Length: 126
Image 1 (spheres, one colour):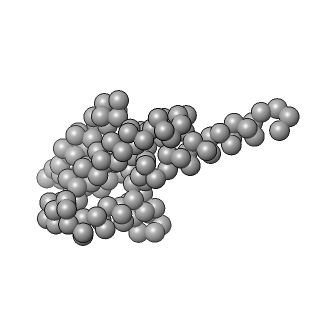
Image 2 (cartoon, rainbow, N blue to C red):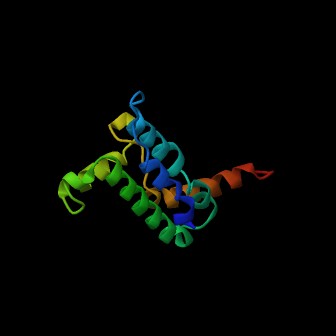
């Protein structure tokens, strides 16, 4: 399901500048952050972490693959320590110098607990 939900990534990665419009890179980054990166949010919030682990791991792998293509990761290589640092930085919030590409693995437990807490607060008599 994760692969199907992230199928549009290939279209995002295929964006290219034209003679008059030179914003493909920026557009791809925005789509990656606000559309593709958030595809699992509902799933993470409504399913226990034990059920979402494999999906979150696959989501992060596909997002990292897209980032690798988008920013030219091949210049340093996937196994390079510089690439690992670049991925860590990309996962930071924008205000901290990152790209805001939150790791689904990192937030899956908090997403589940947050939703459970909101459910308890919404119940009458609480």
